[in-house]
Amino acid sequence: MATMADVARSAGVSVATVSHVLNDTRPVLPHTRRAVLDAVEELGYTTNTLARSLVTSRTRSIGLAVSAISNPYFTEILQGVEASALEHGYGLLIADPHEDPAHEREVVRLLHERRVDGMIVAPSAEPRELVSYLTRHRVPAVFLDRIVDVPEGEDAPRFDQVGAEGAEPTTGLVDHLAGLGHRRIGLVAGRPGLSTTRERITGYRHGLAAAGLPFDERLLVHGDSEAAAGERATADLLSLAVPPTALVTANNAMTIGALRAVRSRGLSVPGDLALCCFDDFAWADLFSPRLTAVAQPSRDIGAQAVRLLLDRLAEPDRPARTLRLPCTFVHRGSCGCVEQPGPLSEKSGHVAGPSGKAHAKAHERTLP
Image (cartoon, rainbow, N blue to C red; front, side, top):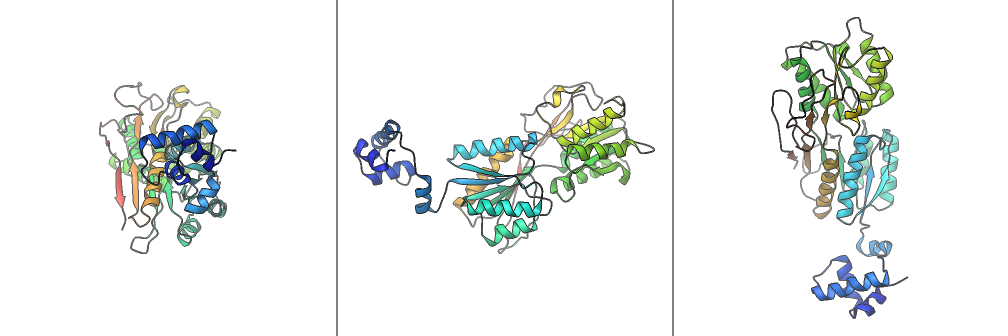
């Protein structure tokens, strides 16, 4: 196996110069850099990451702790994290906390023991132990998708966060259904305790209020962010003496469960139940009817999480930032409308409802 000294001899430079080229630690003349890189290629030299980490105290690796990695939404976030990390020369160590606070703390500890430079975590519904561990060990970390309330002030932990807007897009779905004449609109909400669940419930209630509709607690059920629980929750709604005529499902897995519950009762969408869902996914337009949905910028969430983490590594004492990204309303047929492929698209970066209102920019909040 070729060594750095071999590369130096082949390129006619010092070992120190080879190190500066490979680690980008000092400007090197272009022709010298080219000679070093050609020697690296010719000899098949690979960097000894372990040895370099002993010198620099950096492993060029990021820990990613995300539950339900099989969920298409989190899979796309993972792709965004991986692509951005690779672009900046970082590798990934991935763990699944299984939405269990105790297991979450354990996998974070294991990632920390692997000496990752920082972590990106989608927190569980009870993140207190997670926050305590990261704070106590001063681990650079970014929370994604689920926003955690952390204390403000000079002594507060500095955790950056990134996620999609949750309340306003849900309000838009309710507004859309109410505009179609529905007066009993149900919500299959996610796992209690998650910020995403709270925000979508808030958006649901705001949408009802804006439409002049009363909030009926019987029309709000929890599907725990999973297909099976979403099916049971939808079945409960359909068993009411006066069931809803329209439904909002708060993530893609629960949408699948809801469709199963509707089908098992011999009902149809949108004939018997209009449906709008939070989370678009690759096969949403393969259903019949195709699903009207809010699409989250999942890959961008992953990429922005890496950007925030690298900024934190570069400036450990910088103020904490919370970045919220806009969603997109994807208008198809499950709501009972004629499909409108018009100007709204998943690539537009806008969230819009039938009112035509759109918000094109992400917003960012900075803590002291």
